[in-house]
Length: 269
Ligand SMILES: C[S@@+](CC[C@H](N)C(=O)[O-])C[C@H]1O[C@@H](n2cnc3c(N)ncnc32)[C@H](O)[C@@H]1O
Image (cartoon, rainbow, N blue to C red; front, top):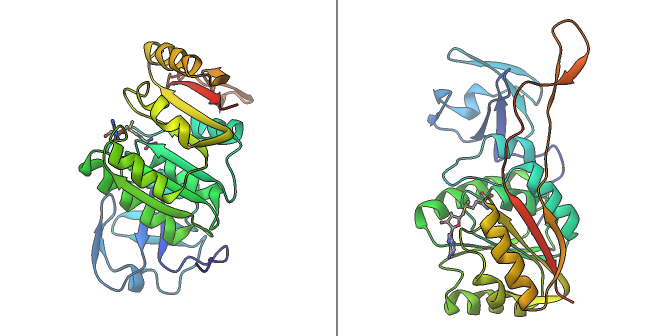
């Protein structure tokens, strides 16, 4: 695979509104409809513009921007609830996920977490995503195709459309790689999946579960201990956004801290 140099993304561009709303636009020479902007021909409309330039399309004032991870995430198509940067960033850092590693995620959903994984794995990395709902898989695939056309490097990515508890799915995963560095489960019922996938994890590899409710956390904790995994970290990441005060200075904003999920990371020793 040839890797694109930074600042050279001929396949897509990003257009950003003043409020941060972002649209990922394929650079093609035909009239297309971009939801939120309307119909236009990207090649002719954006001809002669570069990143940082302001463009007006219809009634919208937009800024042309290099499409990296933040733009791909803001402009992504959505169906299932996504893992946001607060939790994705922590999982990637704590699990030590990086260049050249082999990672499995289930379910793929709209590909929110997969975008973060693809961004760090590099061309030498392997990412396997599993999704059992075709209507989610198609959205996730579209977001990942865009990422492939935008990120400087992109891993060997396989999307398996199937159930993660199915032995056929597990055989396909094994056929791609047997020594996974990391597994991340974002499923309503991750507890039966942990014992099925742990044999595919290398020694020292980590498995994580994203659990919106505490009963899920309790069950995955129990299963991990029963099969001899060592709990590396369990808890909840909290973020508190600050804002500019009307009379000057900065302070925590009025928006309450929202809950996303409890996270559990276990290590195979
Ligand atoms: C919350 S979404 C995943 C979101 C994704 N991690 C992201 O960041 O965008 C959960 C997904 O798991 C899928 N799913 C549920 N059970 C599954 C199973 N047994 N095998 C494969 N996928 C499953 C659902 O269809 C859904 O798309």
